[in-house]
Amino acid sequence: MPFAPFGLHADLLRGTRELGFTRPTPIQTEAIPPAVEGKDVLACAMTGSGKTAAFGLPILNRLISKPRGVTRALILTPTRELAAQIEEHLNALAMHTPLSAAAVFGGVGMGPQEHAFRRGTDVIVATPGRLLDHLRQPYAAMKGLEVLVLDEADRMLDMGFLPDIRRVLKHLPAKRQTLFFSATMPGPIVTLSREMLHQPVLINLERKSAPAVGITQAAYPVAQELKSALLAELVKRGEIRSVIVFTRTKHRANRLSEFLTRNHIENGRIHGNRSQSQRTQALEGFKEGRFPVLVATDIAARGIDIEALSHVVNFDVPASPEDYVHRVGRTARAEQTGDAFLFVSPQEEDSLRDIERSIGKRLPRITLPGFDYDKRPAEKLEVPLAQRLAAMRAQRRGGGGGGQHRHGQGQRPSGLAGRRRSSGPSRGGNR
Image (cartoon, rainbow, N blue to C red; front, side, top):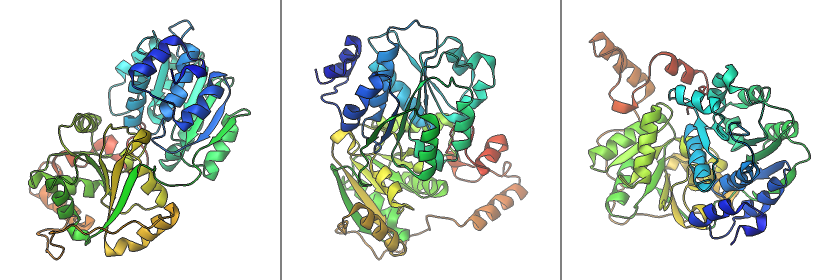
């Protein structure tokens, strides 16, 4: 068996075999042995490299012979979707053991999460903000914690969670094993790792910020106002079967989704203004193949694992080469293959050149035969903010329902949730 040399429990080896793990990925090969030995690990590895099993298997192996009823492992992660995915993955790996994991994140009721703490679920997977909400209560004391994992640490830094992470650490035992995973290692992350880790085993598989070798990349030069029509044409022609489309803003995600719907292309969308149930339904529907297009902001750029995803489309050129690498990393995961298309307007050419310099190659420019590149669209994709605000004020004056705008399920939330979003990351990792 390919995982047998790691000295894992037979029930875990059975689980890896039934999940179709044929051979360890590089990060699993490097990280599992020291983690099984109980050493701290500092690992720099790209998203999509198999990190969940790299820290999940050693955790489960450590806990499999321990008494139940005590939470002994905590995994911190930046987004709700990633927390739910890690929980699902760990429970699948532990299918032949008595161990279990539970996810703790915002946007849903705290009752079931409180129950998970009270019963001493073996592994808690949490976003920092919601975890802090629980840690204020006596039932969430983690006196028996043995292992802490920080996953996608650089993404948590980007989302402003560093202060929350430091607050969480104050609630945890100082004596513990810590596994630290990050796709990049900026200065603040290095500083945090030094505070958290004791004589860690260093693993650097990043080497160069570049997409996986199985990704075929191409740039589609197109006017900004024709990007929606180009995407619709690619889907209708069957050039794209299953695609995550990344937009720059939540507003553009809503408008693109509405455009696709009007053009009879079924789609889902996930971004920070969507409720947790809406985000979950969209992601599940896309994974199950009920619609071919998932429109997303960067909330989905890290960690979301979708089998057989054929394409990633950068509808807007990302702000940085690192964002590009993480976005296109949603396809060709675990050594599979996939295509990554980048829609580039004339105004975005400079950003494209930055990406090409970073990845060390020039992306081929593709023109879609038969597509009318001179067509004038009936409407602009993005409505200026001032115009949107004016429309909302006019609707309120006309008694149109309290200021809701006409984007259906993508409407701006009101009350506390809306205020939280305006002042930084929410308590549950809502982006």
